[in-house]
Length: 101
Image 1: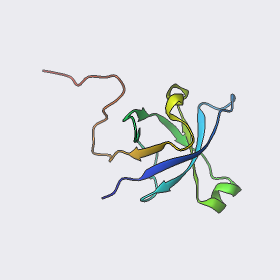
Image 2: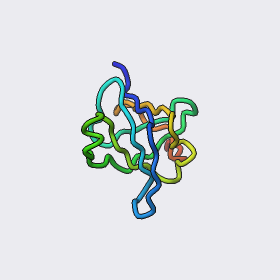
Image 3: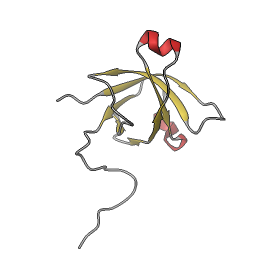
């Protein structure tokens, strides 16, 4: 199974929104729910806060709108490619360590 990829086409920082707006195209399928993504080049986890409602433009172009945590601004740039993690893969991010017995 090929992971769904998201290519960032445009970025907007609208101060009244809860995060950065990343408009992009998906390859290899569609997202179901809020995706768990990693930046392809760096491996950095991208904290997706939500999937926004489609606009007339994104309906026409087939693009997807993601709302991303501003803390990840360094990785939210036109041309970045993010790769979806399968739901059964434990997260490698969040600065948390696994519990040890």
